[in-house]
Amino acid sequence: MSKLSVQVEIKPINLENFEKIPLPCRSCIYWENPALFNEKLPEDDRIEIKKEWYRKTLNNYGICGKILFFRGQPAGYTKFAPPKYFRRLIDYDEKWLNELSEKIVFITCLYIKNSYRRKGFGSLLLKEIINELREREVKEVYTYARLGNPNNPSGPLSFWLKNGFTIVDLKVSGFPLVKKII
Image (spheres, rainbow, N blue to C red):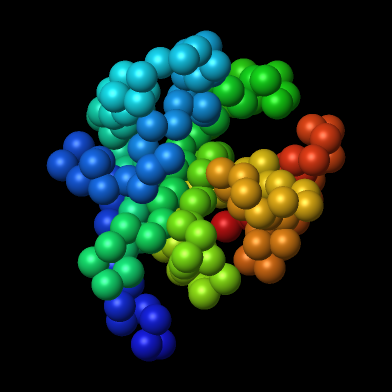
């Protein structure tokens, strides 16, 4: 066990620890509610919309996000669920509109705070997700990575390739679709 992993705790998101999701992620509704994302809603309203998404998704699907704590402080966050839980996906490709399988999961966010990046936290968090999804008998995991800029909710393409994902589609300019069979 590495020294890093001893100081890390990864917890599933629930309604009790929802407030520990790092900002700006806690108030971002890009994937959950694209219609309201572009509106100038107060941050508290966006947080409530996201919390309601978690409430519904937890009830219907189960664990759909995790927070990575380092030395007791939130350092990272991830959100994942089958494609039908993310309305924004159809803006990327209409094929997601008809994808109803719970054996396919989409990671919309894998965010590590700037001061914690390039230290292995992202890979630890991803490994935790993959292990959980394997137990849930998920077969495929997808995300839209980012070319040329690490500041993207799911992270840069190099991160995903380093962690065993492969490029499956380049239709969305600057955001290759990557996947891992687990």
